[in-house]
Image (tube, rainbow, N blue to C red; front, top):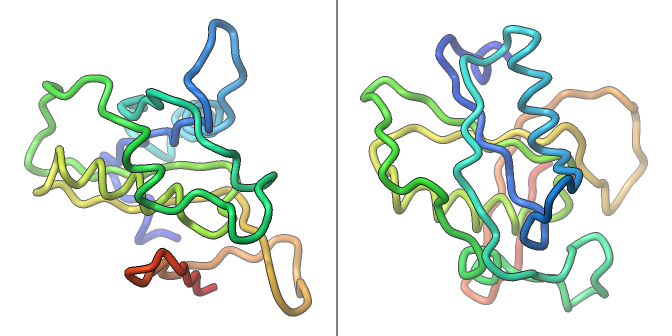
Length: 156
């Protein structure tokens, strides 16, 4: 994962499924702070904010999970005037990647505000929908795509 965690990398924690309330647990922020404490990243910028709640993907029935557009429409940038340098590299950080709809919606929102900034995504864990899990610790890289009707394909 050396090509992901490059010098100067700035983490952006993914928002929770509902707007934050005082003293609420924000797992993605905790992950970003841990990466910073370990020297893996240069900074943490909590730029994404959820303006209105959305169904939590992990609890939604099949066919009722929010799609990338649902996530995109429910989030915004907390500090739209933040200045990012030309050499800035961002990484969106989440605790669990289920299908990837949240990542896709947040990536699109970030790209709208910072079109010239390279953005990668990182999840500490991912669900496996088919097949057997061959290892508990198996770092991987992959691609998440969606069709026009929000059918999402995550590989792996």
